[in-house]
Length: 364
Image: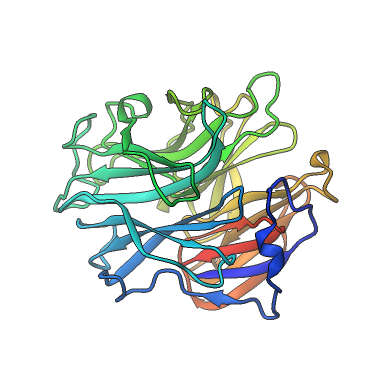
């Protein structure tokens, strides 16, 4: 599903063509189905990701599953649709990654320049073999018997894609069993600081050691050369998993992560002053049932916008219900203006800013 929430008062960015300005917003916001179970040959769709390209094309990704079992128990593909009218309608269904009886999973996307200066959509995802215990009985290592990490890119708004490039050796610790990206979105640092460069492609991810009770944690990996090479950044305390990243106006990287089940009701927030190389101890984030949730920058005064504003998506504190949005005008120190977008059962969610400053909310 995608909901067009509306403008929150920032500039329309640097898109060459403001495609979305052609469409009027409605009240209540428009809602359209992107992927729907029972269509396109799959009974279940989960785990969304979405980006808006520099020319205003909206791309949505998801896991296409054969069962409701979770974690995924095989025969999962990563799929995509495109919208040329800012989320009102969606085009052809495409499979971008498959793995036979195993899983292709956790799509994570970002728009960034490559080493030649070409704007590309980057899609990160994982492959893991079929196993009776889902992801929990995989062995540690870097080979095909364990979890691996891949990336594909598109320079034409998702019309065509590069061949898959495996980056497992660069980003995974060989002592880990599971390594999964995102899911959701990666970021490109815009400002940086004296300890980290601007233009760094920074991808959130998480890991799990062997066995269902093994430790797990969030981390990130990055590229400073336009995707020619990748490195694993620092690893925070192993107390969280699915995370998203946002750059604060002083160049600090904030990691907002799903807490492990034993951590209680608050999400966990880690901060890095050096582009992800080291992380603070965790601090409590928004009260929310353990789940993947989105966080992104909407506007910044240092870019000429009216105010600094971050957007957080998620669900209720105690159950997977009532998808909602919060705003922060103090760089994630506090969250206000909580708005329930759609009542009822809801799971993963994220937001993406379209080229006219409309906010699109993509959610299960």
